[in-house]
Amino acid sequence: MKRKLGWSDVTPRADWLNRRQIIAAAGAIGLVGPVSAAGFSTDEKPNTFEEISNYNNFYEFGTDKADPARHARGLTIDPWSVEIGGLVDRPGSYPLDDILKGVALEERIYRLRCVEAWSMVVPWIGFELRTLLDRVGVQPAARFVAFETLMRPDEMPGQRQAILDWPYREGLRLDEALHPLTILATGLYDDPLPKQNGAPLRLVVPWKYGFKSIKSIVKIRLVDQMPQTSWNMANPREYGFYSNVNPAVDHPRWSQASERRIGSGFFAPRIDTLPFNGYADQVASLYAGQDLAVDF
Ligand SMILES: Nc1nc2c(c(=O)[nH]1)N[C@H]1C(S)=C(S)[C@@H](COP(=O)(O)O)O[C@H]1N2
Ligand SMILES: [Mo]
Image 1 (cartoon, rainbow, N blue to C red):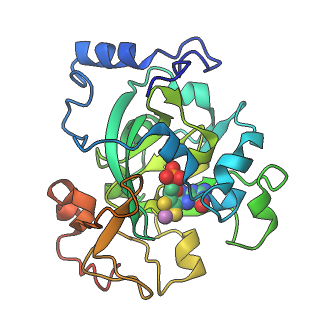
Image 2 (tube, helix red, strand yellow):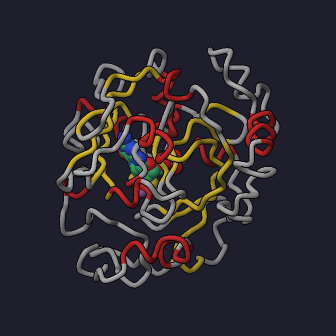
């Protein structure tokens, strides 16, 4: 997976460190050890950069798996800012550089399980969402976090069609948003995040179906009510708010018991889907007392 440029080389801001420096620096101040030693990463073999950046769901660019890689190159991602508001002490429109200033980026190798029953293993570069929420100051009345993707139909051909009720919206309960597994990703391998993967900033919530991991975020709001989310709005019977990976609860139109690992070859056996996508030890306690077959 040797790329021609490291992600710091192609990043326009001089204060971005390369990944090795980041990990060494973070290790020196005790945040993480060597690569992924914090225990959050899987040791499964990651998918290739080519697989991860050529087989995508990003309906703003079309519904075919190859559409995002084909059409996302036209998306302008610099300048970029994120409007952070609602129940926070320091609301505002934050330029991406401000958001990333002083943030210790780290590698997180996570499984990604799409609700369509395919999966990959992705080496993200990013940081915990909670570090950003701490900086803006979450007020005590906040119970959920709502996210929105960029709305720009002239650069996003899918938004000229009524595929979903644009802009793409997602949400998490506050405890889910503050969980250390929940990250905002800015990179993939040693590269900046490809546009088709949600550049310049996307959510990654590895124990939930992939559609919760909203791409190209421009709005984050702390709210007291469960927010509306795109797939739930489109089909509430098929897509719940929680959407935790759950092999015991089938999609109304297909089984969720197993999955196809992208890149494993046409004849490779399907693999068993794990509760919470294999992250049950870390997250199952968030849902104690909740019936996830009903509250899906
Ligand atoms: N804005 C936006 N975010 C999105 C989507 C989308 O269509 N639009 N698709 C989701 C789905 S269904 C999945 S499986 C993942 C796919 O992420 P990847 O293409 O980086 O693998 O992105 C999620 N985030
Ligand atoms: Mo998905």
